[in-house]
Image (spheres, rainbow, N blue to C red):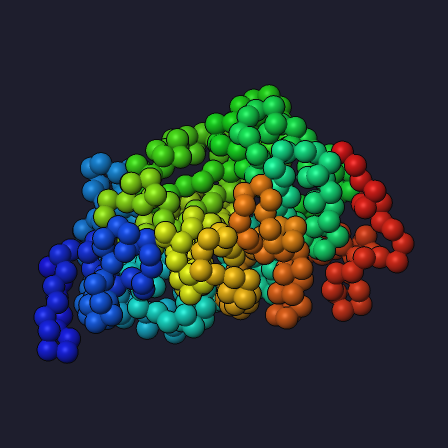
Length: 453
């Protein structure tokens, strides 16, 4: 039992699971689950109590049972006691103070000693500016054909989705995005249908364009991992293996995956030796476990951090929090989406992940493009590895609002950020950078614009 007295009232919280849920900033998903704080004063009381919890408690009290959940077993069995030692004496509140003062090297060194639940807990005590300040110092750099995550850089996933997977439509979107300097993180297509023939066709399309113009980027078709494994067996040009993941074994079962299958997918991609050792692309989102009724009465932000514990085990090239995609049942409005995006980026970076954020909302959420502009700018300041580049910011296949090619240009220009270095050199070689290093179309029509699949 954790307890505190506030404003003359005694508040008790039965275990870490309850305490973490009550301390979470307000969001509709936790209210839907019936685990949110009942009032602002109870939320503040929970934070006071959480600040006094020793970090060691998280190693002895699992929020999801060890015996029945392979994600919990992964988190606890892989915990690095040596990396944890310098902060083992701290409470959650003291960890916040330590993080705000620690140099970048210390943040890197302590990462393997942090569990997702510790990181989620400390994030609940932090203001937005705290989340930004710490994340900005924690760089995570990954390499395939391009290098993503370097200081002073902002990469973009070019997302050329099409409602019928039409090759001409997808190719047109890819060329459009490349002409705006997008695509250095990955050219990643969400297929309209998850079938083998379509997946292989789309992989071949990207690979043909990439090799024809010698573009230093990566490709991915976001099919289920089993489809991608089969595509690899058929000789398809797979760079990155994609999979949506969650923070409990039961929620991952809803995605038809487990840890063994994720390892099989990673091994299959590594067998192709098309890039370096980082071949996984994972996507997550607050509320996924609750939507599958697999949340074990744990708050959605803590479960999101546990999904990062899964991702960390596979040394991914990219991890993307699709922050507002699941809808207002889980993140109700622009304010909740903004807070969740900063939390996700902070938690992922502390755990050593190459975090991107899909700055997005559904059309029935209480949010608009101004809210997305705010989150995009704050994430740029926080050092996010990559964002999305969607034609017109409107994904016509998935039916949600994200960030456009123009938004990426804005963020790079306003915050003095540049593309990945290999991609920047390619843009320069194509004559698509001006004297200030900003993207422009060259005076003569580049061959890229005449590409057809």
